[in-house]
Image (cartoon, protein in one colour):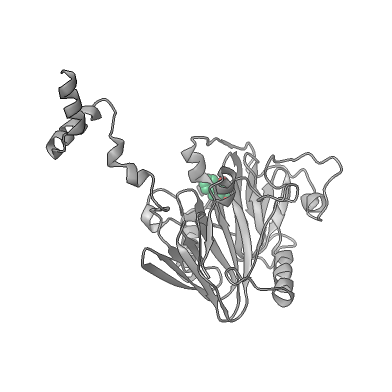
Length: 368
Ligand code: 1HN
């Protein structure tokens, strides 16, 4: 090819689609693919999540949780959980592309055996009493509305003491929401796990010791983070959260988008309780009609008290969910959400916001 032909070839690329197809087939054999066919999808003008808004009414889910208790023990299952799968991502065990959520049930007398894994977990107690979770030798009671952490690579097991002395009244199953960063660790191929030798780990610490040491707005003199970047407090009881929200609702300004919303913190850093997941609790006052907002972190909600509704919109597609206690829903990334409550309500939520923030890509838009 002389210079003239080469220049001509550059100026008149072959736009024949058959020729291009033949070219793609030829390079495919060498594990090559043309960027120009996928560029727009790879770098969208705004987040284009495959996740869809979804709603799990507790009245629909509860009978299946109870039936699962008749089919398999907590011990055989290891963790008896019904996964909340995003309807657009079935088979992938996730509620958003980065987060896993499930409802776990444990019956009086049962244990869920000890193990540990690099995935971080949060528990948000939905109903029942008499269960405990043990983390690193310390047990903590699980009461409705409590937010509890299992830090990465810590031994953990759960049990229900119903029927035992001191727990004679706790004869009902205990259900909690599990939130884990499983899809993120899958993405990074960084998951490890190990089973414990004993079904229930040895209790080596007094119940409440972590909360006394780290949870009184004080820290030990020579603080040495026991769980790396994860909060040293592993239980954030609802009683205190509820009281704070109530005081703020009564005496402070109400945010037009969020109502009264607080984020849980690692008291040693002021950052999120876990490196991969942020958690929040908010109260919408009676008569609240929130302004629309969207954020890049898709969020999973558990309704604690009261009733309300959420409207979720993306590209003209609108979903509205009327929620009550123990219902769950997900607002995917960059979907515009609006919260309403005639009666007033309390909502727990979690998202992967700390990761967005660490990467400098978190974005939130509050529409007036
Ligand atoms: C896990 O360890 C728990 O400890 C719950 O309760 C759900 C889902 C996948 C992998 C590990 C728990 C889990 C899990």
